[in-house]
Length: 332
Ligand SMILES: NC(=O)c1ccc[n+]([C@@H]2O[C@H](COP(=O)([O-])OP(=O)(O)OC[C@H]3O[C@@H](n4cnc5c(N)ncnc54)[C@H](OP(=O)(O)O)[C@@H]3O)[C@@H](O)[C@H]2O)c1
Image 1 (cartoon, rainbow, N blue to C red):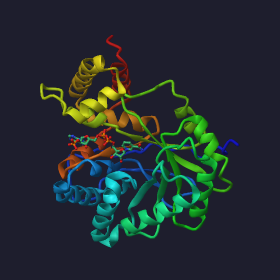
Image 2: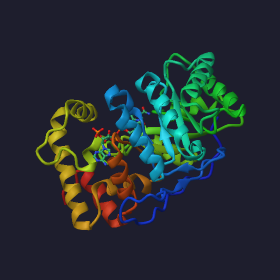
Image 3: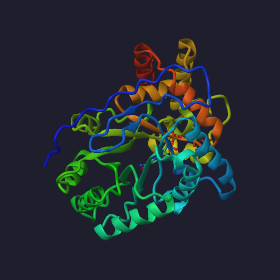
Image 4: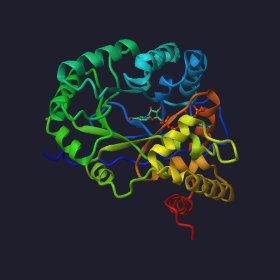
């Protein structure tokens, strides 16, 4: 069954800002059909909580707190991030925020290892307990399990949605075929979101999933939008990328392409400088222009301010077109 076309996502329209301020930042939002809350256009991703050590905890809490204070409302976590630690820390910080952060847009994910109906319900109950909330705004299937019927999994999600425990339903890392199989399990609810890896370098332009999502009104949440810091200008001036970042980049590209990727990143930074914008402004708005909502990982409060400042400046279409060509490898 093909889901009925739904309202297309609207691109955010952030205003230009000159720097960080105590007032909430104009992040913008995107309507999400079936959801009582609109979907913020830019989010804070908390996968890193599984990577940062216990000693990093205070800094991590300060990062989440700063993000909320500065205007971030969308927080993306998952039961697998840090074995539940990410959800627990997020819950702790939000409960201490003004009004217990009732306006936050909290999204979490059920692991690909827990997709059988009884497991899905137990996973959500455990996530809610760790988050200290009665419901989440968005619940995603973190990835498909080829041994479990996606229709059955989504059928259980729909029940949880009807019970009000979940504001909207989504998936992550799903292909067109998987989206179609999953949709067969739904009668009233719709798949509202597909979260996929997408950035200027990791593009898969020919992947039909983008067009499918666009034509079915499924919002794409773009993860790894800064290519793990590379598209913020990290590692471009001699300081070599740490092993985990290098492994990550090389996982996406053939190993011998890493120098080429660095060269393209330097050309993008040069374009940003001559255009009077920043490299992350280009990286984030290249995604937003295509209707995607970027979810950015941040490990320290100053990164929150810097990314908000980047988001506040929208490069012109001509600059984004040029960036698109550079990232593709067009040297003309
Ligand atoms: N659904 C999925 O399967 C899936 C998979 C991966 C990620 N995600 C989600 O997407 C989120 C983001 O993805 P990601 O963390 O892989 O990649 P990313 O957002 O491209 O990169 C995040 C890293 O970039 C660096 N960075 C960010 N802002 C910076 C700034 N202002 N200045 C300097 N460096 C900066 C930080 O590195 P340092 O921490 O080293 O400073 C940060 O950890 C995750 O947290 C998670 O919520 C989902």
